[in-house]
Length: 160
Image (cartoon, rainbow, N blue to C red; front, side, top):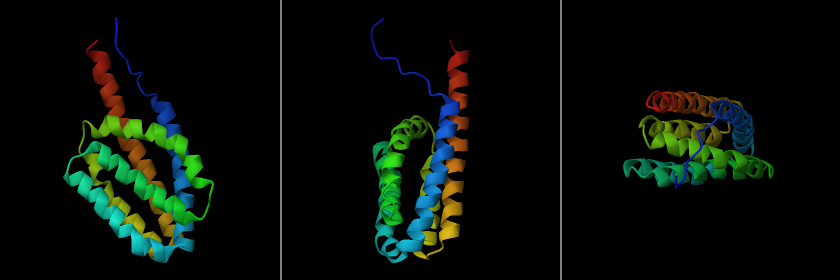
């Protein structure tokens, strides 16, 4: 037996990762709204356009890169130098989860509507609203991803 075998994702670990991510992202979006609303309004729309373009080209790598760029932008706007390094570990795992799901499903590609609402809250200086939307965004993504991964793991187990 030669070749590479990829270990299945631990769904409980994925849930814990997204729970922590929701808190950190919530903080980042709130602080970005409180500290850098004008910069968000000026520079954020280009990131939304980049994400929508990636979706229209059906490029998984471009979709993931655009998503990461949007979130990195918010981390920078948060003014908290600990946010981005704290999120690095999570993004390594998140990319794998996103890749597994985007490879098989169209649903996650609609995140740009959510990102646009998040950007609007930040650009309007609505910190509490931005935090609430960010947490919802991350936790609903977790629910969706875990549901899809669980179904895939069950399909794989039944064919063995």
